[in-house]
Amino acid sequence: MTINVLFFASLKEELGLESMTLDVHDSFCNRAELLELLQNKLGRERIAPLLMENVAIAVNQTIEKADFTVQTGDEVAFLPPITGG
Image 1: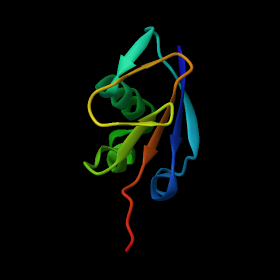
Image 2: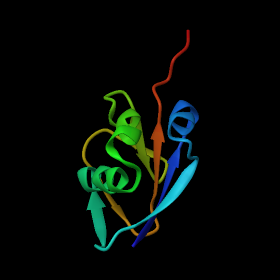
Image 3: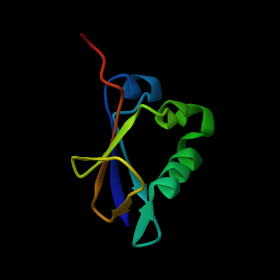
Image 4: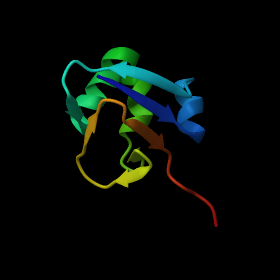
């Protein structure tokens, strides 16, 4: 299975990546498994910004509030906190 992962704004800058493709051997994976795959590929320190509590995750352009699963062909986007006034 292949999923496309996107990083936006400050997360893109911190990671030095705009996007990446992850190959997953199962037919789906959950949030914890996705983060573990990213950690294995990029390293624990490098993905630290993705683990912050206020980082939003969208699957196929829908913000996920809790645990979720992704399937082959899905798009996962990591979005930094929205700031402003």
